[in-house]
Length: 86
Length: 307
Image 1 (cartoon, rainbow over the protein chains, first blue to last red):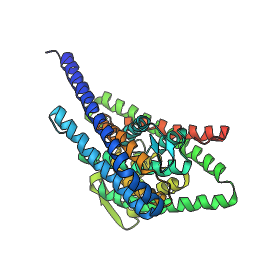
Image 2 (cartoon, chains in turn green, cyan):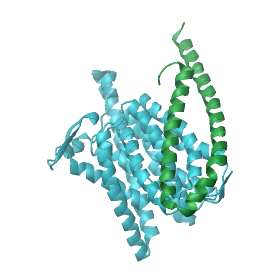
Image 3 (cartoon, rainbow over the protein chains, first blue to last red):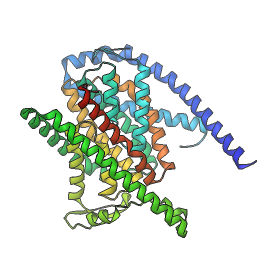
């Protein structure tokens, strides 16, 4: 197979994998937003109004925890869709 | 979507897209991207104090994702990052004190604006000159038989100054094997991180536009490692800033969490993309960032509207 054709096939495979990844991720994000709105909102508001120091600790924990989980999810999705470790 | 902590209504799609854009930039250049995130949050009606604190919280999340990816690619010098975090926090406190001092004299806005324009434009001018020169030198090396390997090496046209700084015998000297630095004075590292922190406290944001170039040109850290290490260092300093702002009631964590969903994808793309570019090209692509910062300040000065 000519090199140009191989490159074209690889590029279209990568794009397809990326689009599937984006779709799966979008579904996860929507579910996540729904969960935040329904389970965390009231408690976070209470903390923000009454215990600012605790709110600061929880806020930091949430953002770091979310980042670690999101990194694991995106890496897992990449592995699943491309069949290799990125 | 209504965010009751800051009392604003913002579309989650907008937040995810802004996060995605800043994530790509952060993963690729090792900057926090507050010069875009701050105005982007202000543009949808968020109060300035919330915009600053929330942006910092989102920077923490994005930097965790990007730094983890850079670490997997071997682009993080943990020892250097930890040392720099100390100096940065000290510098940030001094920068904040400087702001308070200027507030008392009543000319804080004009001083900060003019200083930031000079700094941003100077960084861009220097980096465009240096990276352009290095790329031309590499091209010549390639033509004269140096081969593609020589052209791909992360060289800078400023290395004579970097070597002189590395040769300063101010004890204690420490080695940074991950960054390929045999010995450098701890005081130089502290000075670089302190200056970065000072600008962060003085001008706002993470000041990655100052620290990333200083890591390359002053400490002699290869560009890819400078990006990864800077992101690791940002995790620590932005966490400190987030905590400090959250205690003062300036953080809407829900907004930051939504922004971070987009930033997580963008940061990974940005981090992976660095593998396809040589150091001088990354530095050349970095040039518009401080200029955007300068343009925002000039716009604010001319119109009186803070973006």
